[in-house]
Length: 100
Image 1 (tube, rainbow, N blue to C red):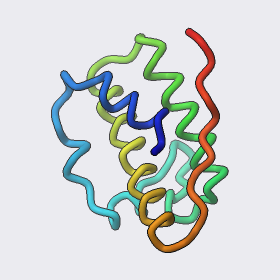
Image 2 (image 1 turned 60 degrees about the vertical axis):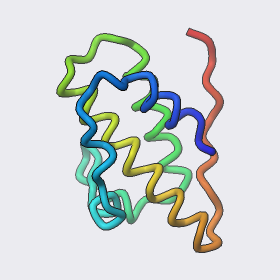
Image 3 (image 1 turned 135 degrees about the vertical axis):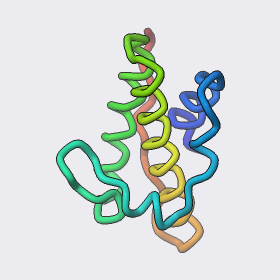
Image 4 (image 1 turned 90 degrees about the vertical axis):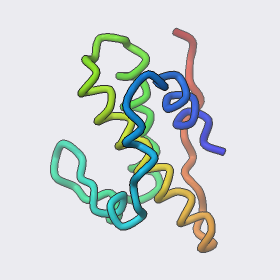
């Protein structure tokens, strides 16, 4: 279980449920702010990216649209991780959250 991702999604339940409608193909095609495709990223890269997104979400200074975008990105990372895990690839090693 990727708790840092799951906790972020669960803590923002007031947002529209668009994060639940993503396919694996959509997740793999999603890009980061530099245009890098998620499906081409290593588990380590996705892990670091997820940590940064989670930190931004916990900061509480994002408008609803930005929160929804970040939650969608986390959902994409989780879908990719689940697919890689089911195919025998190692799962993401997300860093533990530090207080705050």
